[in-house]
Image 1: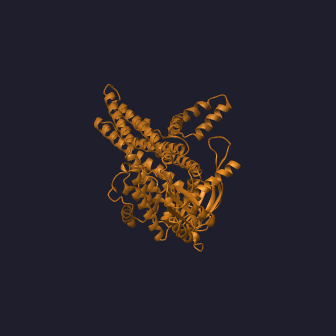
Image 2: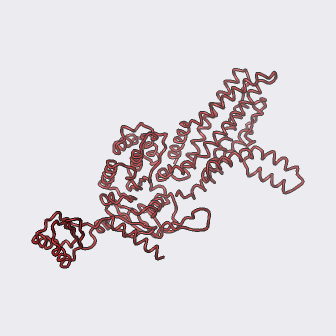
Length: 318
Length: 256
């Protein structure tokens, strides 16, 4: 993974703002650094107000960083010409609602420098890709929130960019729409594109992202491959029994360091994966019934929550 | 670059064409011209001049109203509605965006002036009122004045709200029509401060009276080519300076 080219490079990015007219300065980004490599789906996750959208706006040249450096495909983000190679879907996008779906894609294709002879074909392809062929000649003011999100995805791809930046791409979509957008993202990766995705929907991140960075209070708390996160530590298993005698439960706890939790007549225990066969044998010999035995994966949610709590504790200590 | 500016301009023009406010103002302008015709029937002398005076004033006033009302929201609305996010993520500079928006609105306003001018010509012909080069020159300079008013509205729209932009634009339009008189009155003042102040005011603020040839048109007075070219060049220079200033402000903005 690491030998792949760096597509996005952010070093010590700081953004200060002055809320209102006072002299008070609020730091939104506190020197963040991360890399996005070629052909990966990078999830930039964090709670609301963490600095995700601010980072993305700096990358898109919509706001200027107070200090630090950000570059895409080796170009400083303040440059214009390289934007031919990037696509951007903002959060809750708004488009000219007096235009039809087809007209808006035509407009963006002109701005993006798509050659005249390719425009119509490209617009038709994209309407089909996002499932809006039938609504192509309807004005956007007649579109639902989900349809606007899809036309937003289409405009981000209209010039066939090498890197795509998506800010909350699944927001406002129903489960079917979310799956469709997920499929589009995976398809783009298969086509060799690099995708940077801002989101706080962790299940989507687990499903599509190769690497993630967690930002909390303007600081990157974790960055790495998603499998590294999820496979961190010793592998564990969750065993669920019925009719487990109390003395066997105590024995399991003492011998294997199992953590027990009771639900009525069911006992759930988490144990090191290497000890799971011995624990199962012991429980079965004692007359217990096995309800389930599954390998336990650390969820992204637990890592995310621990990052948020850690940041909260630091904030409290400061 | 031209292609991108043109794409923005065409889209802005399309937005204006689909805006009902414009049709309402155009409709009222045409009604006012007809009203002038009715009013002139009450007069025994100079009926044609009265009709033309009324029509010219209608064209100028309603065109300025359109320029200000649409112009003040031109950039502000894009930022407020966040349409600017997707547009500026494309290979388009902020200067190209702003100039494209400006060009689109100017083209639409000129189109409206052309429609009103055709109506004016029709009414004049029906009444047997004379039409000549002076009328064409007056309309051409009105078009230049409108381009300048749109530039001012665009400048204000690039950093403040439509309401404040309307105040500033209308205020400058009124001041722009008074600055020449103010300079002339100031010149006869005993105070050097007043003399210098009014002279500098005339130099800095747009001299919109230099675009006013309606008197020459209504009275069929001779108009020299330089009466058109000099104000036109002055207007073009002023528009360029105002737009450069607007771009400078817009370039520095953060879209939070």
